[in-house]
Amino acid sequence: MAQFMPLADAIATHVHDGDTLAMEGFTHLIPHAAGHELIRQQKQELTVMRMTPDIIYDQLIGMGLVRKLVFSWGGNPGVGSLHRFRDAVEKEWPRALELEEHSHAGMACAYQAGASGLPFAVLRGYAGTDMPHYNPNIKRISCPFTGEQLAAVPAHRPDVAVIHAQKADRAGNVLITGIQGVQKEVVLGAKRAIVTVEEKVDDLGAGFNAIVLPHWVIAAVCVVPFGAHPSYAQGYYKRDNAFYTEWDDISRTRESFLAWIADYITGTRDHAGFMAKFNAAHSDKERSNG
Image (cartoon, rainbow, N blue to C red; front, side, top):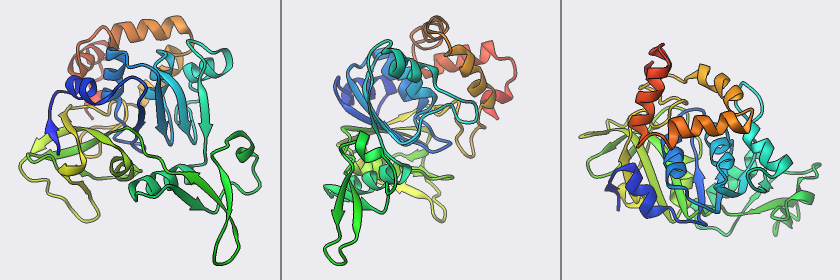
């Protein structure tokens, strides 16, 4: 049952060293504030899942919190490589990083299987690729009805799902609108779910095709305005495209990366403090509040 609590308390209570986390959000609603709090609390030995690990995972990896990454694509969208991710893979800095790579379809099907309580997912995929050679969790099975050869991957059942959404009502039911990724599936398949939201409301006002996550599948709801920044939250603020470009320079060297983290993340108490410092350093207000 959902409990409203500060984000710091939710991370301290529900995320443990060695946990498997899935932090999802597609194009918008990426839970950056929650990722920053993981860094402040220095959660260790994490296995992290994400269909498209981008800036927030670059930060977690660069701070040495991640033991293993389960993913299907990684990069700074629209810009280029993730330099901290590359440094971990190529030079094992700040530590070696274990990889489990899938296709987008394989990841989505694995999340769906987890949400459905199934042990594995079946899909037509990976044919003609060498990915099964590098990922032993991709198997070939025969359809019991037709004999067709199909791919199978284990269900994704993370210890903790972390997502961002637009609204929660006072009972803890959560509304997601706009582009939909696998947020619903990851929450339903996880043991515990933390949801950051832009605001708490009396009535969700859920429209056609909106996703409503019921309060009984959520452990913690945290009201964190701008909790998806620098990604966007439809109806609230725009994507900070300029920062995605800036991140390429910030993260390019270990020294500039660590300096930024010390200044903006570990040097701030919470996400409100981060946003205040960020906005003070960036005079164009349209970057953060649309």
